[in-house]
Length: 150
Image (cartoon, rainbow, N blue to C red; front, side, top):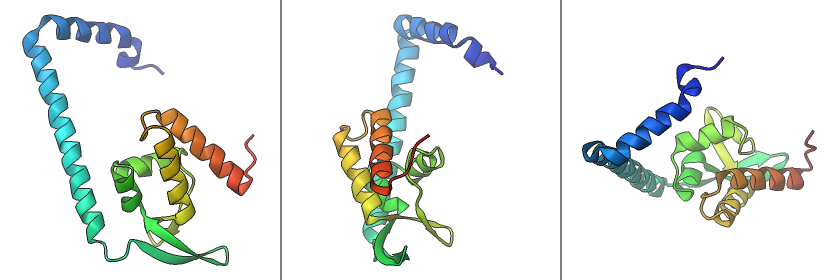
C-alpha cells in the first residue's frame, strides 16, 4: 500500500529542489534547520561521552556459555561509534547487528562484539558506508560463530 508521499516522491523532491534553488529565504531556513539539528546531535554525543566517562565500571563480567566474559553496555558502544543508544538499538532490532546478551532489561555487548563492531566501523570510514558496514559485521559474525545463512 503506497501512501501519498511514496506515490509523489519525485514530484515533491523536484519541487523542493526548485524552491531551494530559487528562493534564498527558503534556502537559508533549510540551512539553519540542518545546522540546528547537527548542533543538537553534537550536544547529545557530548553528553553521552560525559555520561560514559562517569560510569564507574564500563566492563562487567558475565558467564556466557560457561566462560567468564567482559561485557559493556550499549551506551559505551554508541559513544565509541559516535551514535546514540537509540540508533544502536534500532540497528540491532533491524538485524544489522548481532544479538546481544541481556541481563534484566539491559543490553550488554561482549568484548568480541565490541572489538568486531569497532574494527568494521573503522574499515568503512567511520560508518560512511553503512550498508558495507552491516554486511561486513554479519559476514564476520557468521564466520566466527559458523552460522549458516539461507
